[in-house]
Amino acid sequence: MFKKILIASLVATSFGALPALSSAAERAIVITQPPPPPREERIPQARRGHEWAPGHWVWRNGRHTWVAGHWVRERRGSHWVADQWIERNGRWQYVAGHWERGTRMGAGRDRDRDGVPNRYDRDRDNDGVPNRFDQRPNNPNRS
Image (cartoon, rainbow, N blue to C red; front, side, top):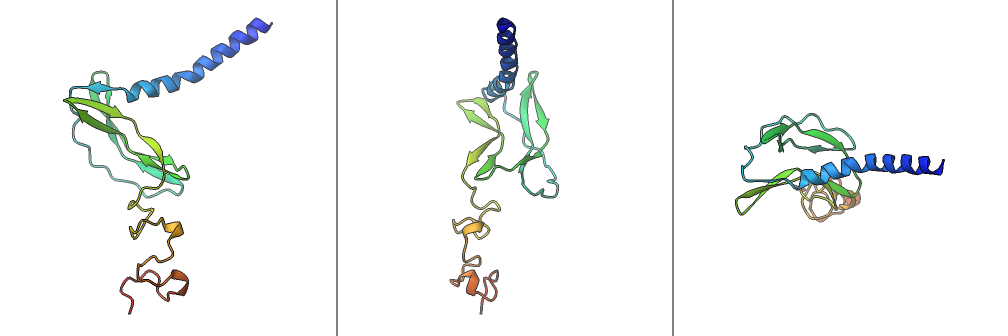
């Protein structure tokens, strides 16, 4: 009885490891043929709690195949780094999209690009008056 449980648990664990192996193998793709230029994509309306993962080229069955962009569920304290191809000495290496800790400045999380994330920003229009005392906190041309 114990042997059957042990074998069943080993089989179940091996199935759980398969997706991790395939994603690690996908990150290690190195080819000599450069990817085609990225396609123009129309980004659908923003979804609350999601970040846009833009479309990209992947190497499948000996050729480049386009994968359309999609929404990925947001992770607090992280931002999405898009899939990309990096050239090194005439070879192209695929780096899969992934989450990176920290905020991405200037991409919707720091509206006025002053280096302070929106949720901590106390002077949204950079006029020197804190928002709680400012009659028009979003007007940079204050008179």
